[in-house]
Length: 353
Image (tube, rainbow, N blue to C red):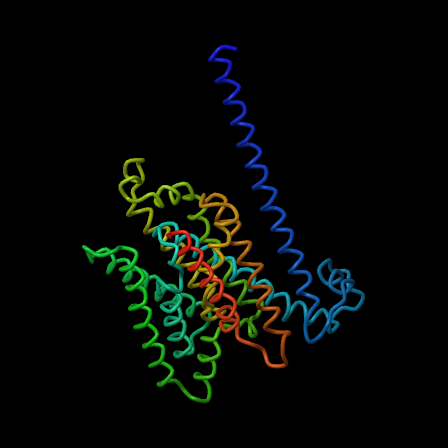
């Protein structure tokens, strides 16, 4: 067999292998989406007021035997909006975490560690303090989150002669602590009978008071933030190589990073406005997704968002069913996320030795 024929066979084999990998990734993503949908259906039937499968299907298809029944009211006004919010919040936080970790080339970066969640929380708390409507609270949260991540990135870029990863993390901790102090000041100044309970409960992270209009107000903002990430997905892969490599490949690193950070911050800030500060989702879930499908952002983003949606849905279902008093989401995600993060550190340490 000639060298040309051997090369042709080798190319054909590589193409078949790539096709198989793409098919496997697509199959896995579709299967994961189906699993999340099944979890949503199951969560719809679980709660203080159990709903049967026939009642659920009747409400969803509009063929319920009794219009205005208790099951229909519970599903349409309480449970389905909350489940939808859990899916959207989990997907947005996990997707934003995957973006931050990729463009900053730092596995420790997340919306929490960079201070985006705390900054968005400060904006939202200010909105609650001023008794503003939801749309204005979301705007304040977006401005607070964008300002925070801008300060963190500015500080990290101005400090030279130090480890960039360490500077970035420390800058996020410092700016986040400052935003946290401002939140504490707002709590001191807030009305103790009206505003303070709302701020305190909101900061713990919860979807208990989610209304249908809240979900309808957040979904467009998340979609607006998601569109640039999808359109710039290959450039995000290039940014993970470093600024010099990105410029060599014709990518304007500064402009693309600004767009991507603004988009991820919009997603984070929008969901924080209705859920409060829910930690660890944006840090842990992208790691799990990366271990499953690798660092390619084309595959990483949808898998991370699906895993985040399913994870937060499970946590929220547990929060509203495990006890008579609802457990805040921020507490449960910390309890579940901290041991996993310690395992990641131990696993990484073993890899360095």
